[in-house]
Length: 504
Image (cartoon, rainbow, N blue to C red; front, side, top):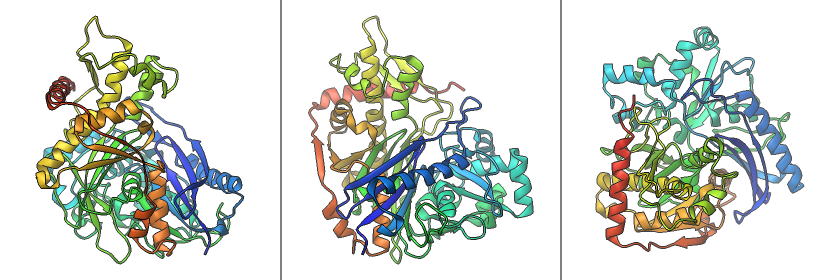
């Protein structure tokens, strides 16, 4: 058997290819950024063709760095920015429009109309999701309503839709006439179109939104040796490499953290911030602002579900401080600037740039920095920026406790993403949650999860127990704050959130 696995990590700002060995160690990495297309306030889009070409390039470069070819890989997995969706022509493979990004709010009017006619939670029982601009279904409808090329292709029966896993896999497996048009259950569960019980597209929702079923991909397990297809000869991996795994990025991180038991949870601090809590084989519909989602499904096994809290701006908030405010020259400098003060000086930053996601789901919210006095410095603002992710995570954990009861309370939190490099944030996260926060030895957990899923599919690892043996802790932050101080800080945060609401 070959000794390596590959993982395409198609993210919000870049696409990477990472090669792992059997111990989960990184052998080679290649990364390329893609353009952020922001034509109007609240709009965010990507160029699907650029992402396709970048995917080819990073695979080739990583293989060259490692001195390997596609024949040396037992399988390849794919993970992706979820909810971002694109449309293309099934015969030519050419994109019909930009890929509309998960952060994009252009489908707000569609969502408002759905709320007015059907009610805000009209699809929650089927999908586990509220009606929101976040999800792919309303974005598809927007393209059908506003982009003539998409509308014409739909009418002609030549349109294909898919989230970015679908787009990447379709191209890796041959494209026009050959490509496998599939998505896995985790990505499908983020569209507002999939029924959680049947794991299939819901016909009533498709009818309501006017989306033709034959334009959508087949829904398959996250780890499957047959359903996802094999690479084609003209691609960067060569002929016949099994695409064995596919998961949305946050579910891939859950898988990469080996959170296979109910009650285990991870939080990813990337462009956004996403906490997933494994609820096992049970579907728990949240009454407190969380999303019910697929955690993963291994071929031949029952699906595993999760509760999720999604935060739109985490690392993106640090980028805003760098690019828009100019308080730092590079993202890592936020740590040093925050370290110039002992605490936040009663300054709070609520980054509701495009509304608030979980557990509030308020599109009328806008970002605020509050609590400013003459005493406040840029160090206090920097600290408030870091702490914002920790406070929003606390909001989500509180909602989980309300939904599941204290018997399923969070015990520890496994963490990954770029912001785990900020010890100030990680220590504050442990303090405000009052739980241990654990960073793994391999922090590329999203790509590792896709590789794990692919490896399981082809027998590279025999079972999930063998994956758990691979996972090792690197750093643990222990809570070190008294209950009174914790309550006071969190109470002030909740006041700041209220100040952000009702702006539009």
